[in-house]
Image (cartoon, rainbow, N blue to C red; front, side, top):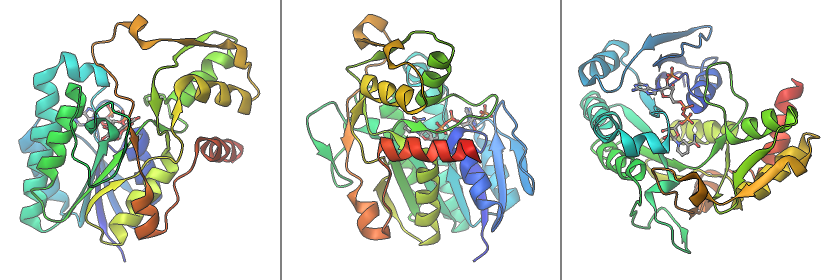
Length: 295
Ligand SMILES: NC(=O)c1ccc[n+]([C@@H]2O[C@H](COP(=O)([O-])OP(=O)(O)OC[C@H]3O[C@@H](n4cnc5c(N)ncnc54)[C@H](OP(=O)(O)O)[C@@H]3O)[C@@H](O)[C@H]2O)c1
């Protein structure tokens, strides 16, 4: 069925993937902040989510059937340093979107993070209670609560999205490792950071499938591996014919970063059980990237 979809953050790694996956079958409008990436047959608008009136006016003007919210401020550390702007963007921005979409009777899909959970030795399911340890996680949890003001909400929690980047887009870990090892440079990676890396194509397909099926509530949409950055980087270098010896393990304490990173493992069984959707392992994700590279 043809839908009118508004993708907020449609110039980002995930947002752009959603735009190009939806545009052939649906009417698509998307927003960018600094980096307009034109897509044929999709309407692009500049938006700063901190401007709540402009955000609400944009939703009103397009009159969508579904709003997919994939806006992300620059980095985890940025949230720690720019707390007021982070609260305004993530929490108040999402609140304005939720209230407007509820008023219009429109679905809201919000992209959240595994970082709403703490650093404890447990595999978290959708029924577990979040307890973030950094301000990024705090504002993403606040945004989840805001999204719930619309009863037709979908919250997808993800982790370490990876895929190829277009010019101007933030480069994923995989691309950073490939670029550095490709130039024969050393790449230092944290061996004490663990993630469930998530292939962007899977994440986009999972969100679209959940929206099209009319699903509501929380879904953990992460890849099927739990791996530390060092092992992952070595695997990436090897898979693309680079020198794994260029990957150097370090401990995150040496970076002295403003935000602590939790090592969080979240369980993706629910999306598989309810939608038959299997999220890729890192090995499968690398193969998918290789296939994309060929085409
Ligand atoms: N990347 C990850 O590893 C990861 C992990 C967990 C959760 N997530 C979540 O997944 C979602 C998508 O992430 P992503 O990696 O695709 O992000 P991304 O590539 O960094 O893209 C972010 C998008 O948000 C836009 N944006 C930034 N600041 C904005 C503002 N103030 N107002 C409006 N738009 C703004 C950017 O626009 P311009 O590029 O045009 O400036 C871009 O379209 C986000 O909700 C993020 O929190 C990501």
